[in-house]
Amino acid sequence: MYSAKRVLLSSALLGLLCISLNAYAKDISSSDKRFLKNAAEAGLFEIQGSQLALKKAKDAEIQKFAKMMTEDHAQADVKLKDLATKRRVELPKEPSLMQQAKLKYLETREGAKFDKSYAGIIGVSAHEQAVKLFEDAAEDTEDADVKKFATDTLPVLKKHLEDAKRIDARVNKDD
Image 1 (cartoon, one colour):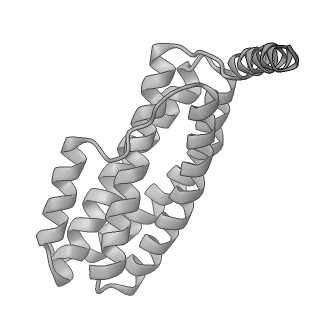
Image 2 (image 1 turned 180 degrees about the vertical axis):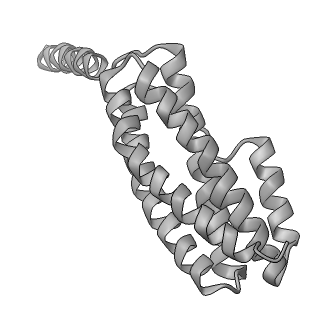
């Protein structure tokens, strides 16, 4: 009899815990989910490309930029994962197929050719796309926390883009 009461009490507590966790996890719109997933892919792409640059880049400024990128995007990734968990959104574990193809291309480049390609692909192009993604989200998202994440992250992305354009212009000045 004692164990039946214990089972019943344990079941009731488990049920309350599930209800509490469900209240904590909030459903969001499909467009907000899409933003979180696209933001995750963009971050993974920039992190993986920058990790590659830390190994392959010859230019000291690109090395410094790549280090900053891995650190800044890793911090943003932690915030993104926390937000996605709270909103019950499963994030991708790797960049998109197109981004993976660009990473494969970067892997084939060496020396100054790598530096030029990294500056253009990861530095400028990826950040132009990320800035647009985050500007749209800051404007259009419905969930207040998703909007705050986009708004708070945007200045860092804009700074990365500004730095990348300067680096790209320098390493590609002879082209």
